[in-house]
Length: 404
Image (tube, rainbow, N blue to C red; front, top):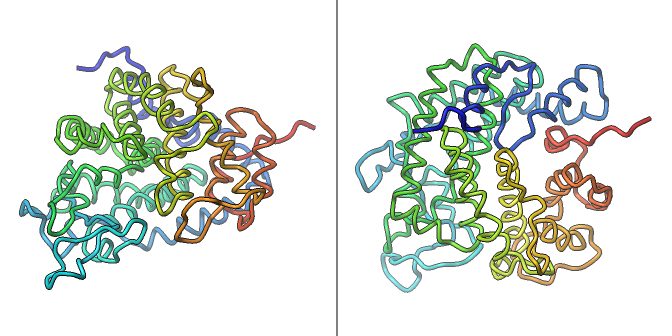
C-alpha cells in the first residue's frame, strides 16, 4: 500500500489536477522548464519557431497514422494469446550450417530484418513515438485533436479489451531454436517512462479521462510487478551494462507513476554505486559498451539511461547528477569523455560497423548544459556536424535566453 504522503502519490494526484497551461508533473522531463518554454512560444520567441513548426508537422501526420496493437501481428505468441507481446532478438540470424536455420546464430550489431517483419517491436516504437509527438503538440498548441488521437492510441495499446497488450514481456527477444523469450527483451520497453511524461502532458485534456488514467496506472502496476518478480526481470536486474541501467530507469519511473515511491527511491538511492561506479571508468570510458560492434551507439545509449535515472532521482531528492566516486567516476565524466569524438577533435578508435553519428550526443549535451550551467557543452553542440535547426530536443530542452 502506498503512503499518502509519498512524493510519488502526490505526483500522480497532481497530474490529474493540472491543465495544459500549468506546470505538468513529470518523471523525466522538467515541468517548470516546459511551462516557461510554452510561455516563450506564446510571446513569439523566434528561436523556438523552427522546432515548434516541425513538431506541428509531425503531429499533423500522426493524426492520420492510426493506432497500434499487439493483436495486429499474424503470429500468435508461444502462449497462444495474441495479446502477448512477442519479438525476435535483433542480432540473431538463421544458421547457415543447418537446413532449417536452427538454432539461430549471433551477429552482433547486424539487425535481422525478421525482427520488424514478424514481431511487435516496431509497433511498440511507433506507438510510443506517436503518443510523444501528439502529447507535446497538444501541450504547446492546446489543440484538442492532438490530445484525442494520443488518448485513442494509448487506449488501443494498453486499455481496450480487443487490442490491449498483456502486461509482461515473457516472449520478447526470442531466439528461434534456442528460447521463446529472454530477460534481454525488457530493453524493448526502455522508453515507456518517457511515454508516461506524455500522459502527464495530457492531464488537462478532456480526451483523457480519470478512468483512463486509473486503468493505465493499473496496467503499469501489473507490469512493474512482473518486472520485479518474473525470472526474466530478475535476470535483467543483474545485467551490468545498458540492459541493467535501463531496467532501473523503468523500475524507478514506473514506481513513481503508480505510487510506489519507496521502491523508486530505493532503486535511485542504490544507482550511483550499482551503475555509475561500475560502468564508468575514472577517465569516462564505458568498457561494457565499447566492446560492442556499435560502440558509439551503445555508449550514448547507456549515457542517456544514466541521464534519465538522474532526472527521476531528482524528483525523489537523490542527487545522481553530482554523484562521484573517490576516483572520479561520474555521469559527467562519461559525457566529457565522448565530446572530442563528437566534435571531430579525435577519431573514434573503437568498433562502429554502421555510420558514426556524432549528432546522437547533442541532446545530452544540451541537457548537461542546462543541468550544470556549463557553456562548454553548448559550444560543443555548435561543433557537431549533421545537426538541423529544428530538432525536437531544441524545443523540449530549449536554451535559456541570455540576459540583456
